[in-house]
Amino acid sequence: MTKTIRLTAAQALVRYCANQLVEIDGERLPFLAACWGIFGHGNVAGMGEALYAHRDALPTYRGHNEQTMAHAAIAYAKASNRNRAMMVTTSIGPGATNVVTAAALAHVNRLPLLIVPGDVFADRLPDPVLQQVENFSDGTVSANDCFRPVSRYFDRITRPQQLLRALPRAFRTMTDPADCGPVTLAFCQDTQAEAYDFPVSFFEPRVLHFRRPPPEKAQIEAAIALLANAKAPMIVAGGGVHYSGATEILDTVAATHHIPVAETQAGKAALAWSHSCNLGPIGVTGGTAANDMAAKADVVIAVGTRMQDFTTGSWSLFKHPDVKFITINAASYDAGKAGALAIVSDAREGLQALHDALGVAGATGDGYDDVRSAWDDAVDNVTAPPSGDGNSLPTDMQVVGAVQRASNDSTIIVGAAGTMPGEMHKLFRAPAVGSYHMEYGFSCMGYEVAAGLGVKLARPDADVIVMVGDGSYMMGNSELAAAVTMGVPFTLVITDNRGFGCINRLQAGTGGAAFNNLLDDSFHVNDSAIDFVAHAASMGAAAVKVSTIAELESALADRAGDIPKVIVIDTDAGPSTEAGGSWWDVGVPEVSDRKEVQQARAEYEANEADERKIPV
Image (cartoon, rainbow, N blue to C red; front, side):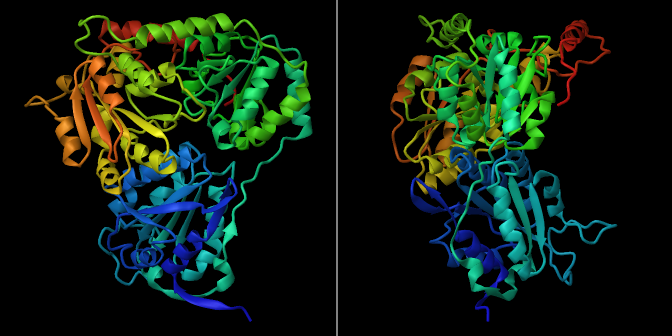
């Protein structure tokens, strides 16, 4: 006879989650490190009571905004290379829909996140309940259906015993190399409180296994045949290199076979900047070394990357008329892009198989040392501290340079949206593998502050420096207060260029008039005068305003402490790094009275001709 234990559905969910383990460096740890929660009437009674009872096994952290607490959880998973994750729970209504943006971010970036929002009553007797979204033609729909397109697995729990099927599927999804992403278990609030006699065996500790699918022999043989005739091969390293632990074999392949490596935003710091084969960033925010090599490459090995438009320059970057693509990706969806020879496998296993097959006399690439050196010089020029006192309003490039000089081998630099991703991707010299954390798949403003908290929780010994513009800071800053109360220190550099400087430059670049991006060019009655130092200090952070790069470097040198330190500096919204970069397909109006737009359209059409018409 099966031994059972009577639990509510919420108690069963939490107990099961607490007993899903991973083994890291010989130590067994819960896969879910914690649960972020904001309680409301849809989860406080059921989930709240269950989390309280298991608070030692599965700690609960209180967020200030559902979206940003989910961002903290996602950053934790990313900084853990997907080996660990976190859960978030919310009430129904706005608490749930606030997480939809974060779910999309996790989906795009292939990152694990367990979302447990409250839902309407399964028995429907009290309908419509507070915050319920009613569909006039479908009685089964709730606000949580918004999660369906941004979840890798979605389920609605209307009966306790459904957890026996839903929870194993949820964890299989979050630990699957190809299907990894957010899981949503919409949890009807009456079901949370209902009891069921669950099998005791359901809650036995279980060590999760991360699959490493090997490549097929035929795929490797076909790839070797392509590389045998390659004159200018290159590797594009994506985030999958980090997630699969493939950085060491990437180093070996590049160094042994003299194949240069370019890094996407997610793949940056797969090799240290100083590595002799590292050409640096590629694409729209890339450098001249990688982009020049991409233009002449005849075989491109894309490892663990989605090959999105910022990486490919909207498919205008690879100009060799006979260029061939080899993809190594655990997800066949991504591996099949660009009409590539697809190696559907774990990145580490795929690179190892390529290395073994190439042997000692493998493919050789050369002729990139000079462009790498030239790119180094370009970076030096724009990141150097200003000479004399003539730099009254620093550039973002100079700010990156100051942060660079303050960094060490334990530094992890964090960013997301706006001006900083481009400048950081181009200019930050990652001192060590894993020292760069950028969310640029979804380019989500408001991610940065919460991400600093999540990264520091995942990597407590790291020196975490977050760089964020004033526009993005205004969109999501409340988890700074959570970091203060939790005693999680990191450094936050706020560059105040009075608005959305990045999009302002794009607006100008496409011929548009300055409009609705910078604060002074937006509708206003009173001038904006936000005191970011006072704002950060009001949440308990140590905050200071600096005026020059020298003052910034001094403030960065004194960043130790047990609470977050915020450094605010005014910057010039105009300049950006001119070197490097590539075309990006942003539609310019065909009809306009503005001569600037007409000129931009002509340039657009000329560039569009270089856009490769290939399957993606």
